[in-house]
Image (cartoon, rainbow, N blue to C red; front, side):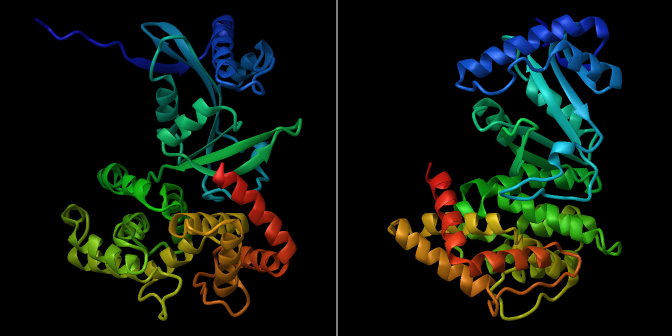
Length: 379
């Protein structure tokens, strides 16, 4: 008996005579949205004119199964104008060219269409950005499954909000190393407290790699690895997590496949040196970069992470108790005279810190921000 061959999905450029079929896929996807409580997206969108424009511009693609189109998406390689300004966060990286996936539609009963579209796009981009409405629970689940990090919120031309996400692909990093980190290291963050989850390490990795771009002499594989491992020690508690992270780097035998003993020791020291409350400066440029990236001083992100940490570690506190803890922490760490240190002059943290200090100084505005984020997190 021979094994049966499972038909595979394939991506190719869409053709003009396929517009009617693509509109059928759009209609089916719209019906899924409505059935799942999303009544705000794709009302009369996308229409034949837009699909035809996609195809004419060469950005429209169909996913076919045994020669029949079962999926559609557009991949834009030019900057997306609506992404120029976002709020409640910031992009993982502002300097790397990115692609944008729009108008993902699928046929009934065919699995793997979204993954196929994302994988095909990611193979052609150094970074990918996407957006959707908060009511689009299916797409939000897909973003999380595919490793995308929430970066903030933007608004369409008609004023409706969209949550924006980004994924960095790091084509300059050793492929086998990257695969190991993605499969074995990053999933550990899914089990940490809310302030040290996957989205945090993805931000630190992106910022570390962006900062490293100013120092061509640095080993990019080392920068990538240090950032990926920097908080792995949280598995044994927060107080000594930086030291435990260093130990994890030293004891990971797989790293010896890609790095010398001296490089591993440098990486271990860099993870040990990243902690903001440390009384000494990092021992190497690698350590200064991950320490700077770990700061991630976007005001809304900082307040959100502070609340999340309080809810995870001090669940006995009520709303007012969480507010007092948040206020005390922000003042001790980020206000004028706080213990936070910055190391890299190219970092966007310098400007963000001034914005955060202005927010901390305005107690009424800070309380309003706290109340808004507290409700979002609790819900």
